[in-house]
Structure formats: C-alpha cells, structure tokens
Length: 156
Image 1 (cartoon, rainbow, N blue to C red):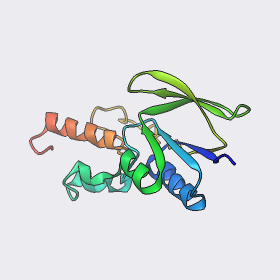
Image 2 (cartoon, one colour):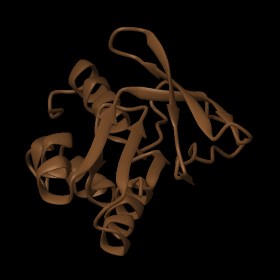
Image 3 (cartoon, rainbow, N blue to C red):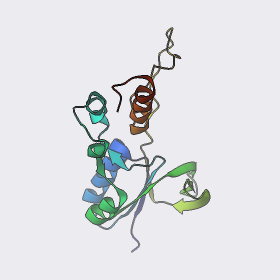
C-alpha cells in the first residue's frame, strides 16, 4: 500500500503545528510543508519582546528550520516556496520555488491550508505615515529596526 501524502500550505505556527500533529497521527505518511517566507517556524508571539530588547537576539526567535523538521519528524519543509494554484479534482498544487523561479506540480492525498493572514490595518488618519508599522512577522520587525537605525541614535 502506498503512503498517504499530506501537503500543507503555510508554515510558522499553524502549518508547523499541523505537520507535527499529522506526524503523530501517522508515522508512515509523507508530509510536505510549502512556506512562502524564508522561515518554517519562529516565535511570532516573541516579536514584541524582541522589539523591546527583552529578547536581545533575532536568532532566539527562530525555533526550527527545515533540517530539524526532517531529522526530528521526517517532514519535508520547503521555505521560499509559493503555492500558486490548487487543483482539487486532480489533487495537485502548483508551486513556485522562489529561489530559482522554477514551477512544479506536487500531488497530494490530503491538503491542509494554513497560509496565515495579512495584518488588519484600520483606516484611520495617519496610518500611512512612514513611522507606522505592523508587527506581525520577522520582516516587519526588521523594517522597524531599519527605520529606528536611520532615524534615531537608539535603534538596533
């Protein structure tokens, strides 16, 4: 009998947790995570602590990487891979490897959607000012620190 193939779209909190749970439910399944961003998982709830300096090193927020997922859970985690299309009838996803701009098709038996969300930005006066930021991702905190470095003496 062929192994069940589970494809998960999205990493970080939801996708990585779903993959770990899928592995606990089936030791035999082939599990692949496609994450558009550069990190498979990081402590997003730690971002305010990193911004405040309570967590001094950015690396402390990086929980696991793809080699860890492979070694610990036998899960293939592909970062910088964007899922462009889902064909439910054929049970395939079209994926672009953002590192080399190559596109390929991956089949699945089961599909888990965990792509995350965009931050909610209220339509209030001043929201478009250059010193107003969202703080949802590591990239957001990097932008904040770059702004502080350019515009103050106390930025990281």
